[in-house]
Image (tube, rainbow, N blue to C red; front, side, top):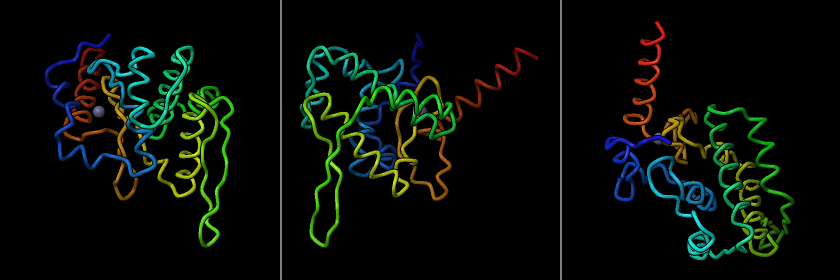
Amino acid sequence: LIRPTLHHVTALDRSSSPAWEQRLAPEPLLLVQLFVNTHNYGVHPDRLDSPQSANMWLDSHGHSIARSDHGALLELREALRHVLLSNTGHADTQLATRELRRAMRNPILSVSFHDHGTAQLHGTGKKLEQFTSTIAATIAATTADGRWQRLKACGNPECHVAFYDHTKNNSGRYCSPDICANRTRQRAHRQRATTE
Ligand SMILES: [Zn+2]
């Protein structure tokens, strides 16, 4: 387990940080980002660490799961994180896709039509299936306009927090350039120094 340093805790204590607000994803992607960030590696306690706490969090977003689906929920979260890491170029994209496919099982989507003949995808089903398929519908909708590829996980292995990349050329690899990018660079530098 990674022992967080004070420096690192400050990096992830973002509730009041204006810089962090610029890393928030637009709707409907925000749900995926908040879901992945229910656990920040090695720093905050896992907000979904039991079926009860998971249901408290899900309830505030209009979802719920059966107790027996708690493991599958965490599997889905980490599969999503893996894909977000591959969006940053920090993980193998084929492996991440396979993991996501498995964790998604068989999402059931429905389409509703609105004024002007526009259509919208919805997740259907009960409990975990409903949550899973809602996320699947979000991924499908945001893949089409390129927003999904902008939701990423920070490349610092002590962080891996999900952030939305608002940069013009979608080139962000770390949640914060001055903290996580710097720390990763310093670590690589130290590793090079010890192997030389
Ligand atoms: Zn980070």
